[in-house]
Image (cartoon, rainbow, N blue to C red; front, side, top):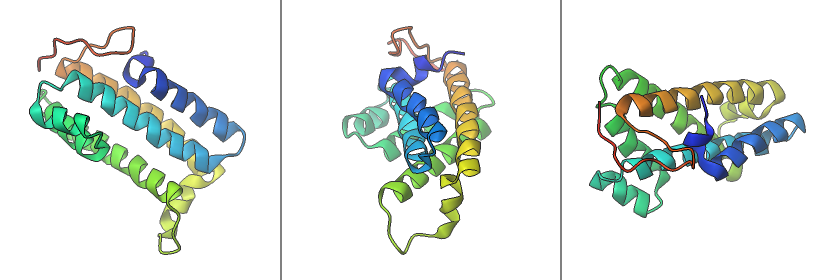
Amino acid sequence: MDLALLLGDRGERCFREVLEAHRRGLYLAAVNMAGAASEAAWFTLGEAMQDDTSVAKALGEDAAGRLIKRVVERLRGAPRMATTADELFAHASYLRDLRNYGLHPRSSSGPAREGAFTESGCLILIMETHRYLVRLLDAARAYGVELSSAGSPSSNVTPR
């Protein structure tokens, strides 16, 4: 499966930098870039589903959290996809939470997130995120989203 179709050029670069940052021991950077790669994937799907006014509005406002929720609502409409869509939403939310924690350090933040910023925690997150991106691509295809080799979604998207 070619995740470049889902991630687009910038998202693919983000994910490559996740791996490079981990190799160099830059776990904070790796986790933050994993969140960026995830959002790139959701924006690709949002562009493919902008025939839905709520998706188009979130896309136009550059509101990643709302966009993810709207795309998940659409994915839930595919046959036998509700649980998968909810699991994808959970991982996307987790990545957003970790990225926000990493980028906005406050003394009041909970220490439970710190495990993701260690060598082993980051490696596990990378493996889980790769799996999540593959599942997101599969879910999009089950819904009927076809992505072109140029990394942009086709304009004819209908739920299967």
